[in-house]
Length: 320
Image: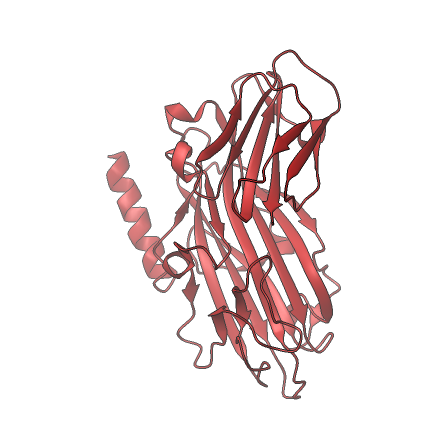
């Protein structure tokens, strides 16, 4: 019966999201699926499978590729990115959207091998904006379960636990969007979005990114997204997440990663996973302060530290 219910929900959501049917799953088979990483450069880049570009918009300018513009000329840490046209400045009177959907676990909907309760779905997004300030720009909206009712992310009240980074406010209205959004010119900015587990079984979270411009030509580059990661955080039965118990430096790292702890413990473990969830480093009795990462390939990694009572999750980049 549970499988049948899931299939029905998936079909209904697929119809409502206009074809976006491939859900990122961070709460089942957590040894494999707990972290999905989209940098648009990986050999097995899966963004084309998970991301839906709104085909009802006749001039949707979102593209994955290597940008060759005055400001946008390189992705986040590799050449390719998701950008509003890789070559041309954004046109006038344009509206362009893309979206992707994530399965957000319910409290009881976690595999036994995930070692504890599911605490949150976390998004990490790195982006850059270059538009006519206050007039053109981009916004992020969210829809829960149906892909029909949308709300601006900063106004979401359904299970949103944390919204961090250099995010726009309710006062940052973009005229071409007629709603709050990103606008102006800025370098790479990082956004962190955390959602609580849903009380509704198999809840879906869909994020929609919309760029819009007015009737004035600006010859500016638009909006570029260099990295998106989605991961599920699982809390051990007797552990509490506390990301302040450690710090790591430098980030990006090329040779050694220095780990500092607020206090030592006789039971310290470290794991480092790559973007496929593969464990590359596993030390069940960690005492050194440094970790050798020079043999890691360039990319984003996740470090999990545990002292038996608390655990911390840190993301870092290796860039040689």
